[in-house]
Image (cartoon, rainbow, N blue to C red):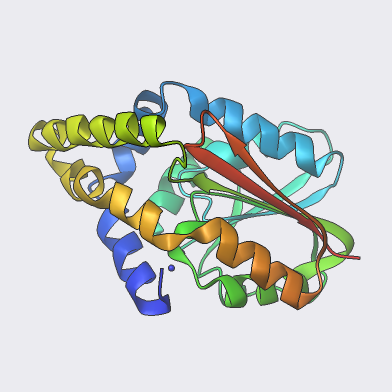
Length: 226
Protein backbone atom coordinates (compact mmCIF):
# COMPACT_ATOMS: atom_id res chain seq x y z
CA UNK A 1 0.00 0.00 0.00
CA UNK A 2 1.56 4.06 -1.07
CA UNK A 3 0.97 8.83 -2.96
CA UNK A 4 4.76 9.02 -2.47
CA UNK A 5 6.39 5.75 -1.38
CA UNK A 6 6.86 6.51 2.33
CA UNK A 7 3.92 8.89 2.65
CA UNK A 8 1.51 6.37 1.20
CA UNK A 9 2.59 3.61 3.56
CA UNK A 10 2.28 5.97 6.52
CA UNK A 11 -1.21 7.01 5.43
CA UNK A 12 -2.32 3.41 4.95
CA UNK A 13 -0.99 2.42 8.37
CA UNK A 14 -2.79 5.39 9.92
CA UNK A 15 -6.07 4.48 8.24
CA UNK A 16 -5.98 0.70 8.52
CA UNK A 17 -5.06 -0.71 11.91
CA UNK A 18 -6.32 -2.81 14.80
CA UNK A 19 -8.98 -0.19 15.60
CA UNK A 20 -10.59 -0.12 12.15
CA UNK A 21 -10.19 -3.79 11.22
CA UNK A 22 -13.22 -5.17 13.14
CA UNK A 23 -15.69 -2.74 11.55
CA UNK A 24 -14.11 -2.41 8.09
CA UNK A 25 -16.62 -4.55 6.19
CA UNK A 26 -19.61 -2.72 7.65
CA UNK A 27 -18.09 0.71 7.06
CA UNK A 28 -17.20 -0.04 3.43
CA UNK A 29 -20.65 -1.43 2.71
CA UNK A 30 -22.39 1.49 4.41
CA UNK A 31 -20.29 4.40 3.16
CA UNK A 32 -20.41 3.21 -0.47
CA UNK A 33 -24.17 2.61 -0.25
CA UNK A 34 -23.57 -0.99 -1.27
CA UNK A 35 -21.70 -0.05 -4.46
CA UNK A 36 -18.51 -1.73 -3.23
CA UNK A 37 -19.95 -5.16 -4.03
CA UNK A 38 -20.92 -4.04 -7.53
CA UNK A 39 -17.45 -2.66 -8.20
CA UNK A 40 -15.88 -5.89 -7.03
CA UNK A 41 -18.14 -7.92 -9.32
CA UNK A 42 -16.73 -5.90 -12.20
CA UNK A 43 -13.24 -6.91 -11.10
CA UNK A 44 -14.27 -10.57 -11.17
CA UNK A 45 -15.68 -10.16 -14.67
CA UNK A 46 -12.31 -8.89 -15.89
CA UNK A 47 -10.29 -11.87 -14.67
CA UNK A 48 -12.62 -14.44 -16.22
CA UNK A 49 -11.74 -18.08 -15.53
CA UNK A 50 -8.12 -17.55 -14.53
CA UNK A 51 -7.18 -19.87 -11.68
CA UNK A 52 -4.16 -18.45 -9.82
CA UNK A 53 -5.20 -15.08 -8.42
CA UNK A 54 -3.23 -12.65 -6.24
CA UNK A 55 -5.28 -10.12 -4.27
CA UNK A 56 -3.08 -7.13 -3.45
CA UNK A 57 -4.14 -5.16 -0.36
CA UNK A 58 -6.64 -7.92 0.35
CA UNK A 59 -7.58 -6.34 3.67
CA UNK A 60 -10.31 -8.27 5.45
CA UNK A 61 -10.79 -10.57 2.48
CA UNK A 62 -13.98 -9.14 0.95
CA UNK A 63 -12.74 -9.47 -2.64
CA UNK A 64 -10.72 -12.63 -1.97
CA UNK A 65 -13.84 -14.37 -0.66
CA UNK A 66 -15.71 -13.46 -3.86
CA UNK A 67 -12.83 -14.75 -6.01
CA UNK A 68 -12.61 -17.95 -3.97
CA UNK A 69 -16.17 -19.03 -4.76
CA UNK A 70 -15.03 -20.32 -8.15
CA UNK A 71 -14.25 -24.04 -8.30
CA UNK A 72 -10.55 -24.98 -8.55
CA UNK A 73 -9.42 -21.37 -8.17
CA UNK A 74 -6.56 -20.53 -5.84
CA UNK A 75 -6.50 -17.05 -4.34
CA UNK A 76 -3.56 -15.60 -2.41
CA UNK A 77 -3.88 -12.47 -0.30
CA UNK A 78 -1.28 -9.82 0.46
CA UNK A 79 -1.74 -6.89 2.81
CA UNK A 80 0.29 -4.36 4.76
CA UNK A 81 -1.78 -4.68 7.95
CA UNK A 82 -1.59 -7.79 10.12
CA UNK A 83 -4.91 -7.14 11.89
CA UNK A 84 -6.75 -7.03 8.57
CA UNK A 85 -5.21 -10.33 7.51
CA UNK A 86 -6.39 -11.85 10.79
CA UNK A 87 -9.98 -10.90 9.94
CA UNK A 88 -9.59 -12.35 6.43
CA UNK A 89 -8.24 -15.64 7.76
CA UNK A 90 -11.25 -16.04 10.04
CA UNK A 91 -13.57 -15.81 7.01
CA UNK A 92 -11.85 -18.32 4.79
CA UNK A 93 -8.84 -20.55 4.32
CA UNK A 94 -6.70 -17.88 2.69
CA UNK A 95 -3.05 -18.26 1.75
CA UNK A 96 -1.80 -14.84 2.75
CA UNK A 97 1.27 -12.81 3.60
CA UNK A 98 1.96 -9.48 5.27
CA UNK A 99 3.94 -7.47 2.74
CA UNK A 100 3.80 -4.44 0.44
CA UNK A 101 2.66 -4.40 -3.16
CA UNK A 102 6.00 -2.87 -4.19
CA UNK A 103 7.88 -5.95 -2.99
CA UNK A 104 5.73 -9.02 -3.65
CA UNK A 105 7.34 -12.10 -2.05
CA UNK A 106 6.43 -14.59 -4.77
CA UNK A 107 8.34 -16.08 -7.69
CA UNK A 108 8.26 -14.76 -11.23
CA UNK A 109 5.17 -15.78 -13.19
CA UNK A 110 3.41 -17.26 -10.16
CA UNK A 111 -0.05 -15.86 -10.95
CA UNK A 112 -2.28 -15.50 -13.99
CA UNK A 113 -4.42 -12.73 -12.48
CA UNK A 114 -3.80 -9.87 -10.05
CA UNK A 115 -6.65 -7.93 -8.46
CA UNK A 116 -6.71 -5.02 -6.04
CA UNK A 117 -9.34 -2.82 -4.47
CA UNK A 118 -8.47 0.46 -2.75
CA UNK A 119 -4.71 0.01 -3.17
CA UNK A 120 -3.68 2.20 -6.08
CA UNK A 121 -3.94 5.61 -4.39
CA UNK A 122 -1.37 4.60 -1.76
CA UNK A 123 1.38 3.07 -3.89
CA UNK A 124 4.28 4.02 -6.10
CA UNK A 125 2.85 3.30 -9.55
CA UNK A 126 6.13 2.31 -11.22
CA UNK A 127 7.10 -0.07 -8.43
CA UNK A 128 3.63 -1.60 -8.48
CA UNK A 129 3.65 -2.04 -12.27
CA UNK A 130 7.10 -3.63 -12.13
CA UNK A 131 6.16 -6.16 -9.48
CA UNK A 132 2.90 -7.03 -11.19
CA UNK A 133 4.77 -7.62 -14.45
CA UNK A 134 7.24 -9.88 -12.64
CA UNK A 135 4.77 -12.14 -10.85
CA UNK A 136 2.23 -12.33 -13.70
CA UNK A 137 2.53 -15.17 -16.17
CA UNK A 138 2.36 -14.29 -19.89
CA UNK A 139 -1.27 -13.75 -20.84
CA UNK A 140 -2.11 -12.68 -17.31
CA UNK A 141 -4.34 -9.75 -16.39
CA UNK A 142 -4.07 -7.11 -13.67
CA UNK A 143 -7.12 -5.20 -12.41
CA UNK A 144 -6.83 -2.16 -10.14
CA UNK A 145 -9.90 -0.52 -8.57
CA UNK A 146 -10.07 2.50 -6.29
CA UNK A 147 -11.97 5.66 -5.53
CA UNK A 148 -11.52 8.58 -7.94
CA UNK A 149 -12.11 12.31 -7.75
CA UNK A 150 -15.17 13.25 -9.87
CA UNK A 151 -14.36 15.43 -12.90
CA UNK A 152 -17.88 16.84 -13.28
CA UNK A 153 -18.12 20.04 -11.22
CA UNK A 154 -21.64 19.39 -9.96
CA UNK A 155 -20.76 15.85 -8.94
CA UNK A 156 -17.55 17.08 -7.33
CA UNK A 157 -19.61 19.48 -5.21
CA UNK A 158 -21.88 16.67 -4.04
CA UNK A 159 -18.85 14.47 -3.40
CA UNK A 160 -17.26 17.14 -1.18
CA UNK A 161 -20.56 17.56 0.67
CA UNK A 162 -20.62 13.83 1.28
CA UNK A 163 -17.16 13.95 2.82
CA UNK A 164 -18.21 16.89 4.98
CA UNK A 165 -20.95 14.66 6.36
CA UNK A 166 -18.42 11.86 6.89
CA UNK A 167 -16.26 14.23 8.92
CA UNK A 168 -19.20 14.81 11.23
CA UNK A 169 -19.71 11.04 11.45
CA UNK A 170 -16.07 10.72 12.45
CA UNK A 171 -16.82 12.61 15.66
CA UNK A 172 -18.94 9.63 16.73
CA UNK A 173 -17.10 6.80 14.94
CA UNK A 174 -13.79 7.67 16.57
CA UNK A 175 -11.77 4.79 15.14
CA UNK A 176 -12.63 6.05 11.63
CA UNK A 177 -12.04 9.75 12.27
CA UNK A 178 -8.65 9.85 10.48
CA UNK A 179 -10.09 8.15 7.40
CA UNK A 180 -13.23 10.27 7.21
CA UNK A 181 -11.27 13.51 7.66
CA UNK A 182 -8.51 12.88 5.13
CA UNK A 183 -9.64 10.34 2.53
CA UNK A 184 -10.94 12.85 -0.04
CA UNK A 185 -7.60 14.68 -0.05
CA UNK A 186 -5.69 11.42 -0.51
CA UNK A 187 -7.95 10.39 -3.40
CA UNK A 188 -7.61 13.69 -5.28
CA UNK A 189 -3.90 14.17 -4.61
CA UNK A 190 -3.00 10.67 -5.78
CA UNK A 191 -4.06 11.06 -9.45
CA UNK A 192 -3.65 7.31 -9.42
CA UNK A 193 -5.33 6.44 -12.71
CA UNK A 194 -3.05 8.66 -14.82
CA UNK A 195 0.10 7.58 -12.98
CA UNK A 196 -0.74 3.90 -13.12
CA UNK A 197 -1.70 3.87 -16.80
CA UNK A 198 1.59 5.58 -17.64
CA UNK A 199 3.58 3.14 -15.49
CA UNK A 200 1.87 0.10 -17.00
CA UNK A 201 2.56 1.39 -20.51
CA UNK A 202 6.22 1.95 -19.70
CA UNK A 203 6.54 -1.55 -18.27
CA UNK A 204 5.15 -3.19 -21.41
CA UNK A 205 1.56 -4.06 -20.52
CA UNK A 206 -0.93 -4.10 -23.38
CA UNK A 207 -4.68 -3.56 -23.88
CA UNK A 208 -4.72 -1.03 -21.04
CA UNK A 209 -8.19 0.29 -20.22
CA UNK A 210 -9.25 2.99 -17.77
CA UNK A 211 -12.91 2.95 -16.77
CA UNK A 212 -15.03 5.16 -14.50
CA UNK A 213 -18.07 4.12 -12.50
CA UNK A 214 -20.77 5.61 -10.27
CA UNK A 215 -20.68 9.16 -11.65
CA UNK A 216 -16.90 9.29 -11.61
CA UNK A 217 -16.42 8.36 -7.95
CA UNK A 218 -14.71 5.04 -8.69
CA UNK A 219 -12.27 3.89 -11.33
CA UNK A 220 -10.75 0.73 -12.70
CA UNK A 221 -7.57 0.17 -14.68
CA UNK A 222 -7.19 -3.14 -16.51
CA UNK A 223 -3.97 -4.28 -18.18
CA UNK A 224 -2.69 -7.47 -19.76
CA UNK A 225 0.79 -8.96 -19.95
CA UNK A 226 1.49 -10.15 -23.50
